Every structure is written in C-alpha cells, then in structure tokens.
Amino acid sequence: MSNTIVVGAQWGDEGKGKIVDYLTEKTDVVVRAAGGNNAGHTVISGGQKYVLHLIPSGILWKDKMCVIGNGVVMDPLGLLEEIAKLRGQGVSITPENLLISETAHLVMPYHKGLDKAREAKRGDKKIGTTGRGIGPAYADKVERDGLRTILMTQPEVLEEELRDRLARHNATFAELGVDLVPVEETVKTVLEAAKALAPHITNTTVYLHEAIKAGKNLLFEGAQGTYLDIDHGTYPFVTSSNTTAGGACTGSGVPPRMIDKVVAVGKAYTTRVGSGPFVTENEEIGDMLHNMGREFGATTGRARRCGWLDAVLVRYAVMLNGADELAITNLDGLDGLETIQICTAYKLRGKTIHYPPSTAADLAACEPVYETHQGWKQDLSGITNFADLPDLAKAYLKRLEELVGAKVGLLGVGPAREQTLVA
Ligand code: GDP
Ligand code: IMO
Ligand code: MG
Image (cartoon, rainbow, N blue to C red; front, side):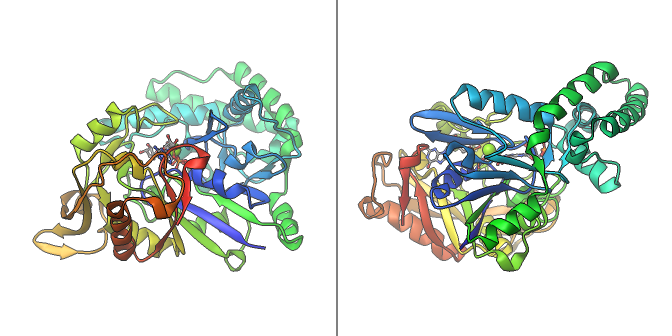
C-alpha cells in the first residue's frame, strides 16, 4: 500500500494531469480533493487528447476508481457536460468508476454570476479568475451558506434551499445591476442534474478508508498549484482553496499519517494565467512557446504568461509540500534555446533573499538573480531513456535538483503518456 499526493509546484498547469495519468497505472483510486472546474488537466493517451476539469485523470484507465472529494466545489452542470464529452470520446463513466463526496459543495449559476460581477468591479485589480464561480462557492461554504452535494439525493430539500438562495442572490444582482439568474429554468436544470448525478454521490471518506484497509493504492491529483494556494500563494492573486499537500488530507478525509509520498510537478520553465506578480516573466520565451502552439489555457483558452524557471519558488514549494520527488515536465520546450536562465535568488530593495516574500507587492518588487546555462539545442521529444539525454540537459536538471533540494523522479519530453522518462 502506498498513498501519493501529486501537487503543482508553480502557478498551476505544470502537467499534473499527465503525471497523474502516468502514475495511475500502479494506482487503484485517483482522488481530487480541492478546486473545481477551474482546473484543466490535459492528457494525451493513445493519440487522443482529453481535457479533465472535475473528473480525476484516472478515469482514462479501465478498472480504476475516481473520487471527487469533500474539498472540491462541484458544478453539476459543468460535470455533466464533462461526462458527456468524455463519453463522446469513448470513456466509460458510471458509479462503478466515479464517486462524488456527499459533503462536497455545489457551484451554482449564481456563483458564476457573482464571480464575473466581482471581477468586473475589481477593474484593473482583477484576479483574472476562470469565471467558474469558484471563489463565491468557497465563500458560501466558509460563510456556512453553501449547498452540499448530498442535497442532490434529496430533491425536495434541494429545491427549497435553491429557491431561497436564488431569491437572495437575485436581490444582490438587482442591486449590482447584473443580469438575474432565471429561477424556474435554474431549478429545473439543477434538479435534472441532481437526478443524473445522485447514483455517484456517497460518503467517499468511508470509501477511501475501506480502500486503504483493503491494501489499495491512492493517488491524489492536485489541482492548481502551490502559488495559487489561498494561504501560501501570492494572495490575493490566488484561487480559493488549499492547493498544497495538506489540502489533499482535509479535502478527502484521509489523514496525514496515511500519506507515504508527495510528488511536486513543475515545468522546466514557468507559466502563469491570470494576474499577479511573476518575477521571471519573459516575453521572448512566451512568444517562442506561443509560436510553437503551446501554453494556451486548457480551461479558458487564454495565452499563459511565460518565463524562466524560478528555483526560489520551486525550492519553497518543495519545503511547503514536503515533496520527496520532482516531476519536471516540458523540458522539450527549451530545446531551441542557445542559453537558458534559472532564477536562483531575488533582490528585494538591495537585499538578496532566497524565499518568496509574503506580499504580492514585495514579490512584484523582487528582481531575479539569474545563472545562465548553455542550451542543448536538440529535439528531446523522441528520447525514451533518461540516460540518452544530452549532457547539457542532464546538467540543467542536476543544477535544478541542487537548487531546490529534491531529486527529479519523472521527466516530460512531450505531452504523450510515452514521453515520460523515469530518472
Ligand atoms: P495541469 O493543469 O497541471 O494538468 O497542466 P495542463 O494540462 O493545464 O498544462 C500542461 C500542458 O503541457 C498540457 O498542454 C500538456 O499536454 C502539456 N505537457 C505536459 N507535459 C509535457 C511535456 O513534457 N512536454 C510537452 N511538450 N508538453 C507537455
Ligand atoms: P490547473 O489544475 C492555472 C488561476 C486563475 C486565476 C486564479 C483564480 O489546471 O493547474 P479562480 O477561477 O480559481 O478563482 O481563479 O487562479 N487558476 C489556474 N491557473 N491552472 C489552474 O488549474 C488554475 N485554476 C485557477 O487563472 O489567476
Ligand atoms: Mg491546467
């Protein structure tokens, strides 16, 4: 038995989906424990591209159980769309391979409305959210005004609660001058969705503990990344959940002492979607990657901001998540470069620092301290053995390991499942 948490070490989109897909082969149960359909996890398997938002990437493997844990905020309409799309691609989804925690919270259409209205109000201080209603749904949960998925198995109670929320939220929308959420239509679609999803809803904490007792292996699929964590990220330019390793425990009911391993996934460079400080941001790298057709968001299609690898951030993420191992993806993105930079420290108001400061304003004021590496100038995408990597690529990874204090266990040289090398 071995239970592993996979977390993002940067600002999300590190390639967690691909790494989880790779690790699922030796896993029995794949669990999402935080976030919602703000996540977009791309997996390329058997030549087909799949994008997962709420459903754990393990669904692409036969005979694996997937669990949406209590820490997730679940948009039932979004989930049904995702299920329909995956079924259209030939993926089987039934209560035999997808369970939803009865204590996960629902994302309702009024949450999306609030998300958009709040962003519009923030003006040039906007967070750049995905518009999926994530922040308002978590706010209702913490305010103790949320609706939990168990209500989907109790249609009469759900209808009553939903009508109450719609009346209250529509009153707010009227004040804000925002379009109201149509009551009858929303009640109808949510009740229909409830009927369709009810067979998946159960006490997943009990399920997970029974699976552990039966000797099964669990894999926790992180969503977002360390620097989008509500506590540890670049607040307020973050998401509304705990995206770091601890969130896997609170978001599933599996206690910390049952976790055996933490894998931190990071790109060989850095990307970020949405607003907020980004010390190593570099337009030339962004142009290069976008011209290769890469680094467009899987959820919103937005072009991701790009920059050099920031070892200050990854080192802190390794510490914070207790990462035993790194999975470095997209090394092939650097193939064409003459020279490659790694940020090893920051300069803040004349002082050299080795950790990210705690305010977004201070992080924005940091200057990167770079060291320069010679590029390997070779296409890595066809390499199937770690030993066959060019020496310069190996040197880049070795230096990264030294700088961040964890070993590279897995390496990505392309988006497909087979383009994952074991170090
Ligand atoms: P996630 O949200 O962490 O699962 O990451 P995303 O799927 O949003 O973004 C990662 C992107 O990089 C996707 O388009 C993946 O297909 C792609 N990807 C992952 N690993 C590699 C890799 O090693 N090389 C290349 N070229 N693409 C990769
Ligand atoms: P995956 O799991 C990258 C970002 C948004 C925005 C901020 C808040 O694919 O790595 P939200 O809608 O959550 O309130 O937006 O967080 N964000 C992500 N960025 N990858 C993600 O997920 C993200 N989920 C949210 O762009 O900056
Ligand atoms: Mg993503």
